[in-house]
Image (cartoon, rainbow, N blue to C red):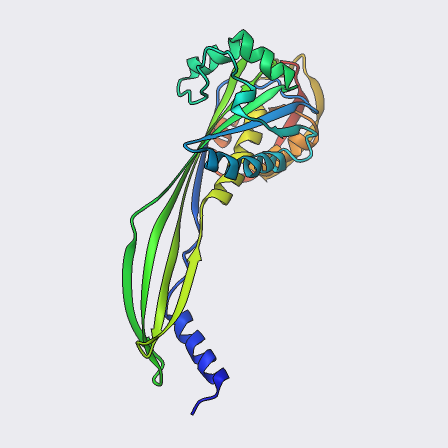
Length: 295
């Protein structure tokens, strides 16, 4: 007769060998910078989340604000969670921020009531984030296994988890739409049970939900949108020079720019290195001259 510990160890070995983990989520991000931002140190950035249900909005609002705040860490910018109802009272948007066209956002920014509402909140920039989550249909898998002494069957249900995060960055001081950021994430969740000797169930579960890594990518995308890049020295002729930064990673370069309170970088004319579809790593160290521009 086996001891209790022998049984537990045997069951654990079978459970661990009969199913795999859900794997790491896959996340992609795209940043489309439309015009330069007038971002400055100590600006106040409002973050509002719109979703299909109020529950989803409440669930993600504080998380998204934290992701933006962490990405802008060192810039001295202040981030605040705000509500849709605080900004669009009596505006022509009809109580909604679900605007898909750039022209519609520009019209909202020009709305007098909207500008008055955001001014009362003390905001200089606004990040509007839409979050959509979905779960695919389950797929089932059954496997037989054993170690020569103990046999069992594992039944597992796997669901694909999808998240789509879209954001716009509004420069309220300059009354303009600055950038659009899109983040897509895919993960999976698994649940099931190993039936040892086909009778004794040992439940198991695992998940790799994509929202958290997507939120992190969103924050970095917003940080990118706050920094204007140019290869034209005339574009920074009237700007204040802050210093030089160097790195082989674009995101790390952006963080260095923000820590120096800059909002514009002058790059050399090797444009092939700086396409907006930037890979995370450059083929070599890149040096950038950092400026703080008024407009």
